[in-house]
Image (cartoon, rainbow, N blue to C red; front, top):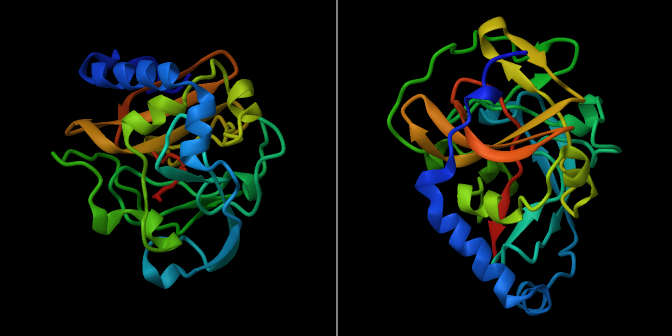
Length: 235
């Protein structure tokens, strides 16, 4: 077992998240569905260019958007940033469904097929006292208004208990694995999924969503790891 997953922190600093969830449940999903206009907003095409410093390779992606009743006022990207398609199963091991990976508050994304691209040296330690800076947010590649989700937004949609249930949801989250930086290795593809939020907990740690076959939770993990991103847009 690689380190990281067993180092979760209790969400004591996010009691407001639990309050938001209670309020959302009290409103009822019918009212929320009306407020968030759950109709799909259609697809859009993005020409990712490596020269811009966010994408690891040149690639054209067609994305869609998903509105979730638990998070009124935003829509979610329908797949991982950089993915060619939505996953086919919760344990899909394909690079096409995985998309790209980022270290916390780092502009450069990484593609991991048989080898990592780009193959420039990875920072193996991040210690900086700030959240994900706007200028480093790779979600801006999608256009105006796109950004990383907050821990509160992730907590609101995390109503499932396992990766299997996360995949059944409208978002179709799956176990794309993550980059274990100290060995410069992609681990747990098809077993675990990790998704960054935009907020740190401590200078070396930040909030993320983790899913696997037996559990799902929002917790803190080392900023230096390479995780997936599921972007959101304010509407």
